[in-house]
Image (tube, rainbow, N blue to C red; front, side, top):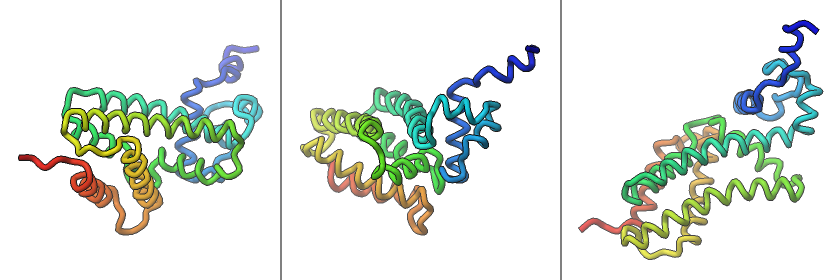
Length: 203
């Protein structure tokens, strides 16, 4: 086998495959992603991709887990800063809300949610683990703000569940491009909600 042929048979880095899958899904949706097309993009055969991922749904979930891993590291860095809890909460919200229509990360989530009703228990558990990380970080931040008397004494777990439901609803609207619900419009609504329901008025 020639060196060139050997290079063609070497699998590309896993991150390259998942990044290419994410870009394709964001642009054309999961229906626009084929193993043959992705294989051409990364220099692998569709057979090799099926060997690694088995199904398109598994590829979708793996891509989401990879994307969330990167976003989780960014979230941890933001929340561990030496800054008032209100500022870190605003950074959490800013990271949560999509950049705009067809935001790649949120397009992945919409595809996963769309297939959740037919997912097996393992896939549901993996999805719940991703969402659980967002929830735990928010609960911890709220509890810190309450302990420092920067936030009103709400129940951190219950407030986190309600805030994330608000963020999810608004974020879906932003990701699909519903008129009147652009990113800045949504962030303004969320800031007003937090000001009224959580933040202590300055003296």
